[in-house]
Amino acid sequence: MHAMQSGLHVMVDVDDPAELPDPSQYELLILDLDRLDHPLDVIEQLAPQVKILALSISLEPADAANALRAGALGYMTKADRPEEFVSAIEAVRSGQLVTSRTLLHSTR
View 1 (tube, rainbow, N blue to C red):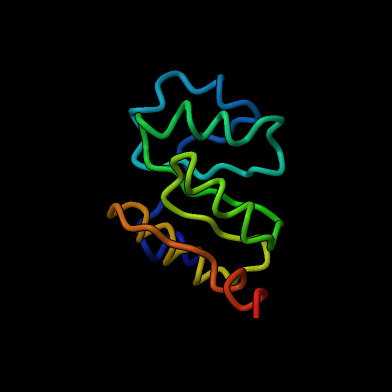
View 2 (view 1 turned 30 degrees about the horizontal axis):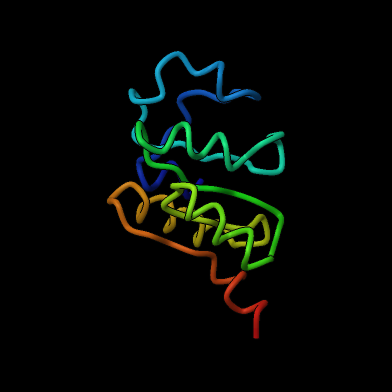
């Protein structure tokens, strides 16, 4: 519901990023890091072509740092609220770096 209000649309859902015909045709990719065998390699491969928002169950700051270092513009956790996720999508779409508030609060 929030995604529709923000004008966001899912264009493709694949289990393997290699199935994407041309990643550069997308404005943004949301990668579920928990579903990938080598998520950092996938980010490094795709980041030069498209903006990436990484999604994971992990609350480890090192995991977020590794994803951002690999080229993702954002890192969100599956514990984040939908409205935070939509805000993160908007931020990454505009080229901003974004990190989960849930992750930030879990390190205190």
